Amino acid sequence: MILHPGILALLLGALLVIMLMSYACVIGFGVLRHWDRSSYSQQQLELERRTYLISTMVNYALGFQALSLLLFIYTMDSLHPLFIGAMCATGTLNANPVGWNVLLVKIPVFFLAWLWVIVNHYDLQVEDSPLVRPKYAALFALLPLVVLDGWWQFRYFTGLDPQIITSCCGSLFSQSGEGIASSLAALPVVPMVWVFYLWLLLLLIFVLLALKFNSSALRYLLALAALLLLPVGLASVISFISIYIYEMPTHHCPFDLLQGGYHFIGYPLYLALFGAILCGLVPGLMRLLQIFAPGLGQIFVGRERFWLAGTLLFLLLLLGLVSRPLLFGPFTLQAYL
Image (tube, rainbow, N blue to C red; front, side):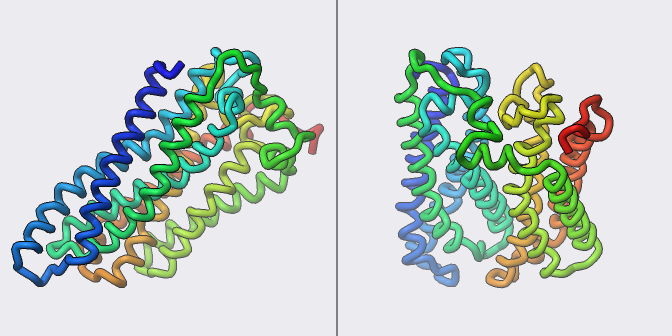
């Protein structure tokens, strides 16, 4: 099983990312100690050349690290026929519970990696690169998460045994079961529908106001609301979005959405959710960084609307994907309300 292409790609990719990040942190230690943009010494010139090289390497490393979330979920789903009792990625993850730890690490690393790449992109466009020290300091915080992700992936994949009889989503996401998954599945449908749509409405209002007014407070509120959309969105998927797509009031699995029987609807759904969160975080983060690096404002001011427009488009896509089965599908939960 370890020779599965997806598993090999994830393990080798994780090893390469750890190596590149470790080397970048070694260089970063010297940058944090000796970086002085006003200096023209040989040491400063050497550090500047290294930072451009390292930034490129880290961009590719974190880019793969972010995309590995999609590859991991796809691999989990493709492996489920190998396990007795597994019907989707849930069964594959249950075959070795360490897999859930991998997923819990990959989701925050996905956002942190993309944010680092985005900040690095804009910082390199400023003449004096004012965020060199904060960027390298952030790498020291990211490295333990990347190492933990790689270690748990190794433990998970090497611990898989096709002879194991695993349990699938029917037991994990059961309203009568125990644990977080069962608690989310048991959330009342009508209140969760209201929470989800009101939260989307709040985000849309923040985006439209931010497009019209140049207010830092609006962007901070947008970033906070976008961040909280992650738990609201995932809870909504398990609570009510899934059952309207499956047209079964007892089926709450968030992974079956990725299968062909449901037209792979999960991929654009999660893309819209994660895309809206990421795009919504960027304007607030850049406004915060401009306090310490005013030169970023001149670079980002012409590009901020791109991220606000991206947030708006992803929110509308998410709204359309969720609303279609609720409003126009044949399934109704009227008897259960």
